[in-house]
Length: 100
Image (cartoon, rainbow, N blue to C red; front, top):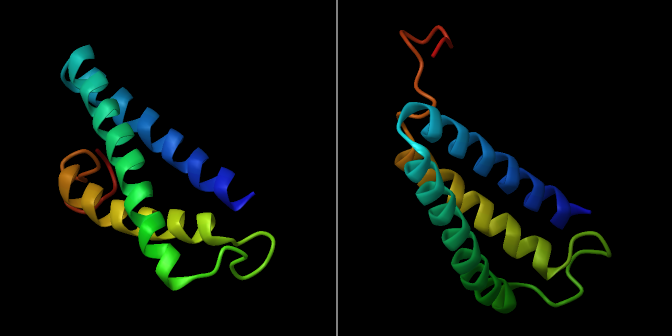
């Protein structure tokens, strides 16, 4: 269930980025950004799975938080900081009022 939550969060983030880029720029830009997110997710999950292999056993901390969930947690933390830098203009607000 935790894995599904992480995958759904990535899906929603991809839709938000695609929609904003498609509206602000063009369809090609939206599709390129979806491709970037897809590639970084796949490669990042592979790398974080290798890191998680050395830190945690396959069983993990219980039936709901196994090594795959741990690697998705590592991936999501890393992606959060990367996407915060890469898409800093996407969610910018005017004078801190929260309006875009």
